Picture 1: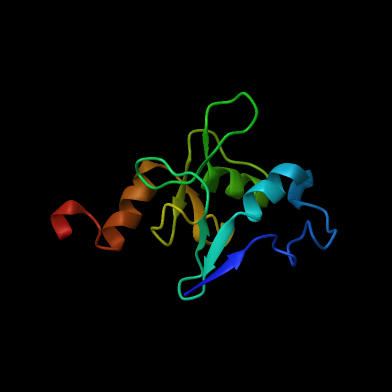
Picture 2 (picture 1 turned 60 degrees about the vertical axis):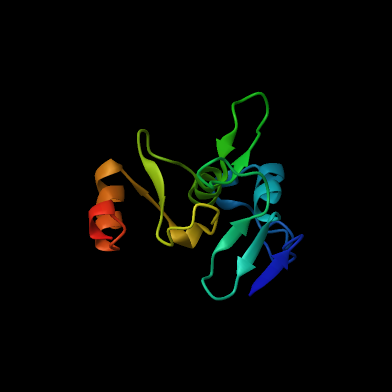
Length: 123
């Protein structure tokens, strides 16, 4: 079961609250007004374009396409540490819910995969 979120009227932007860490209001709205919430999982599934691996993608200015979950994490937390990945607790590449995202390196991501029984040798 999903709930469409066309404008997210209860979002900080719609309510006039300041964005975390002085974020970009236009970009914040562009990201957080374009998902469907899966009530069962709590995932906020990106409704826009995805890449071949299922990750949401977005164009920002003249830059190459960016993974939406990374932008969502940055907008919510204010930064992404250099050389770190943004991993999904929910294992859903379309999810942009900041509560489902965490920073980690390749080792953290591998440990997360093994702990959840998703490694190829565990199947």
